[in-house]
Length: 181
Image 1 (cartoon, rainbow, N blue to C red):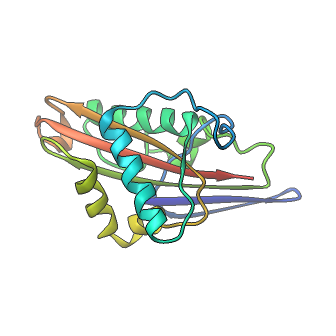
Image 2 (cartoon, rainbow, N blue to C red; image 1 turned 120 degrees about the vertical axis):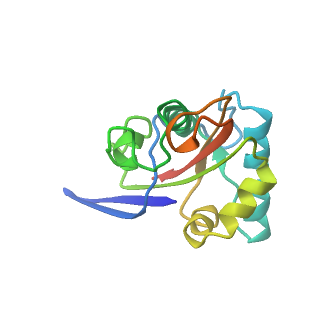
């Protein structure tokens, strides 16, 4: 789980990183507007379960963001095919740098991001992903943060993932959280 917040106050830029998490790009659609993002049944289930948990805790639901989803897909795919599991990118750069390519910080006074990752072999369903995250304080904090307004979700399934996955069949889920204002 990672969290990043950028606050712009005049020319001052403050960056605070708690855990490890990615960024995303482009402006989010207005509430009620279609995002134009196609997501799988697993990804849709994760979104529904996250929003159900948020509603149970009196929080607003998260809107699906095309830029954050693109960031999540890139990261899940990279981890699956390069055999690593980390909030950092394959080249060792921070998730904040990776997300900045997708989820622009310019024109915004406030910017916050976070990320949750989970993997299982061979498969993972939304309920299990949410159970694992809710039992981890940093991941739970991302799920229940009132700071976030948008989310990107990616679930990647690979028949034989290298590296830390030991050549096994795996499912990797990345959720990237964000807010700009």
